[in-house]
Length: 205
Image 1 (cartoon, helix red, strand yellow):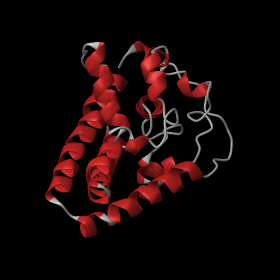
Image 2 (cartoon, rainbow, N blue to C red; image 1 turned 90 degrees about the horizontal axis):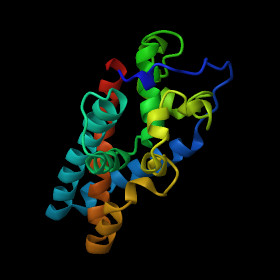
Image 3 (cartoon, helix red, strand yellow; image 1 turned 90 degrees about the vertical axis):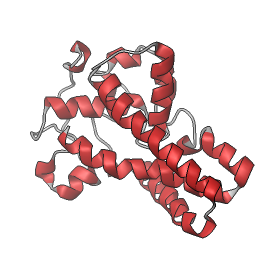
C-alpha cells in the first residue's frame, strides 16, 4: 500500500446519521432499472453490457487496484478515463471510495473498519453506506489518508457531488437523446449491476 495510505484521522465518537442523499438516489436509480424489462431493445442490451464491463473495470481495476493500492501505474490520461468509469458505477467519487477502502485495510474487522462484517452481514453490505461517517464524510478529516489523490484537480473534480446526476453524465444523456427511455433504463441496469458484485468483494479485500 502507498505511504499516503497509512495516515488516518482518529475515529470520531458521534452518532451516525442516515445519508438521505444516497438513499434517495439509489432508490430512484433502481426504480429506473425496474423499467428496463418493459422497454427492452437490443441496442439497450448492448448499452447494458458495455456499461457493466466499463463500470466493473472502473471499480475493480481503477478505484481498487490503481487508486487505493497503487498496484500499477498508468499515464494520467488513462487513469482519469478509468476513474470516470468508476464514477459511473454510482459508488461515489474516487476520494471517498479510496479513503474508505484504505481505512478498511488499516482497521480490517476491527473498530474503525467502515464496513466490518463483525457488525453483521447487512451492515457490511448496505448499512454502512446508508449512514454518514463522522470521519469519511468530513471535508477535512475525510481526505487525510488520500492526500495523494486530493492534490490532483481532476480527482477533486470527480469527487461525488461535483457534477449531478452522476450516472447520467455523460453516457446516459446520450442514451436519452438517441434512444429515449429504453437505452437509459438499460444503461442504468449496466451501471447498477456492478454495485452488488463489487460490494461483496470490497468487504473481504
